[in-house]
Amino acid sequence: MPLAEDPRPLVGEPLALDLLNTWWMRDGVLQDLLTIPGGFAVWLGSNGLDERFAADPITLTHTNIARGALKTVVDGGRTDDLDAVLGMGRIRATLTADGPGEVPEFDDPRWGPGWLAARSYLELLSTAPDRIRRCAHDTCVLRFFDTSRNGTRRWCSMAACGNRAKASRHYARSNPRSE
Image (tube, rainbow, N blue to C red):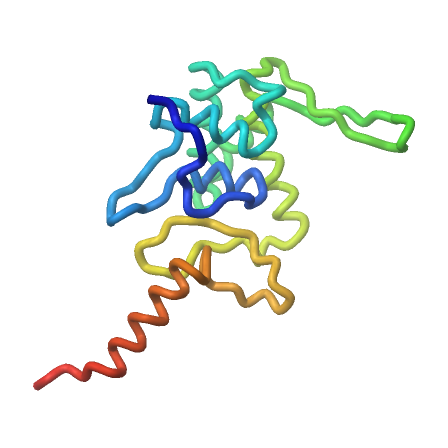
């Protein structure tokens, strides 16, 4: 049965990180939104891409390639796969009634969602690369862009991972181990 809503614990991050956050942990098991029936359509919809791109198998394959390339780069690996994804599109400058603009163009529109996510990563790097973070909780794999005023956010969510970490520290302080 296809998904009706997005099951991920963290949504709304910039597109590159939101694509990476299609992987998350639940009860110690890695989940993958893009392998759940209807999950790709949910991801496209949650990012406003469902009007422009179809949730077909080839678009999903290209988006998975982009996700893997993003993960490699964010984890400090090589950049050539992400460069290859970026080579599938370009930005065309335009002048509109509202002023200057940019329009993404693709040789094959099925690269669109993955290309836009890769482009989003470049924008994050040019804005504040030090604010691209991985949740500090040991078992969490989620990524976020730290928009806190002082740039010290550590958790994907204070209500989830941050609270678990605080509870764990409290338990360790209040229950000394017997020797």
